[in-house]
Length: 98
Image (tube, rainbow, N blue to C red; front, top):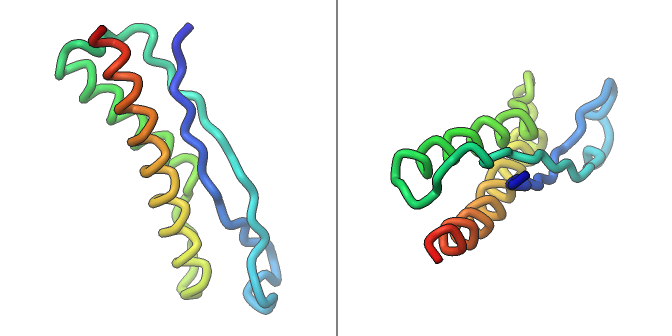
């Protein structure tokens, strides 16, 4: 089964974390299945990109706070996950085209 892994560095906000100097960080990965897709077609690639976007939103959940450090950690999480996913996506599509 073909799967796509979306790693992300997610800041964990716990009770009292706002008073702490830095939020704790954990690394999460989400596997995105694409075994049902023919990545040689643009439509299938669009579907995979939508699945990846959904996975990033799951891993990098938007914090319910106005704390700037937490908001920055959320933004960093999304950027890190998107960058890693883009690298993997490029290689996966390249391999599918062989």
